[in-house]
Length: 97
Image 1 (cartoon, rainbow, N blue to C red):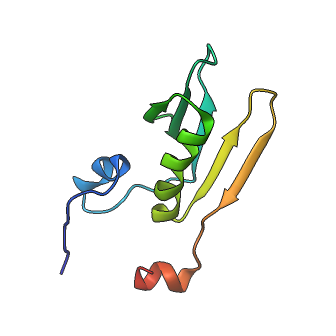
Image 2 (cartoon, helix red, strand yellow):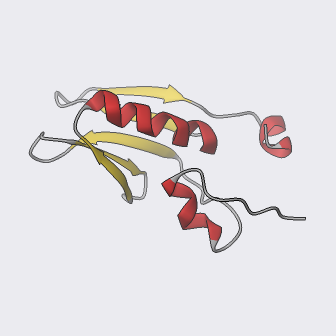
């Protein structure tokens, strides 16, 4: 039995039509080309939101990465990256923990 609930994140809208969440390897937080805002996007390039500061973008991206059990990659303007792994083990994925 599949229980469909209201999506708790914008990313879930992309997977609802087929009943499963899409496979996403990472959620990225990147500065905009003009460095005036920060963009949250998945690894396929689909933008999930624009935020005025990096901190706001990270706070918005963390629950999505945690829910999908994937990595959060923050790309800094100087070229460095910061990675946080929210991946769950196979047992947690099996039981939906």
